[in-house]
Length: 173
Image 1: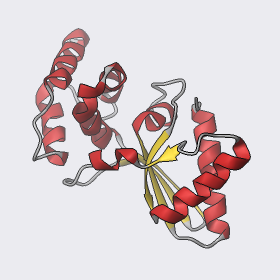
Image 2 (image 1 turned 135 degrees about the horizontal axis):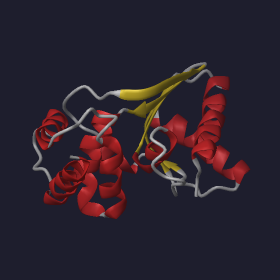
Image 3 (image 1 turned 120 degrees about the horizontal axis):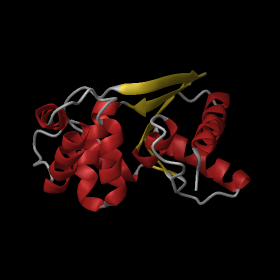
């Protein structure tokens, strides 16, 4: 399990390896790692979901870090890439430059939309929704629906997401 501090340290190690090789790379962190690191909504996460470019170079550097740090081979992975929105302009909460490597952390609007889509998977994703409302500037259900539709025009909003959002917003009134 990775704490927020550990997430930052490990990503810095990957960035240092890539920078030493002069690889221009981008790592966009999302998922549970982002919820812990940026939004302080989780104490730990079991992996780091990220969009990485160039994929082979970044994952090779991550594999080297895994070996030296005694981590699982897939501690940094891009399995969530299929959920990254194809529409809209994603926002980013934090952007850090480490030489040739840009680290970005998905912002509250894109995270809210992704967590709404992922809410069918389980409680952790639905719990994250409540943490994202304020940073995303959402005070009513229509705003949340609008954000979702900005990023996922071709998807229906899962009923679980609407139920959680409605309950959370009602409790805040």
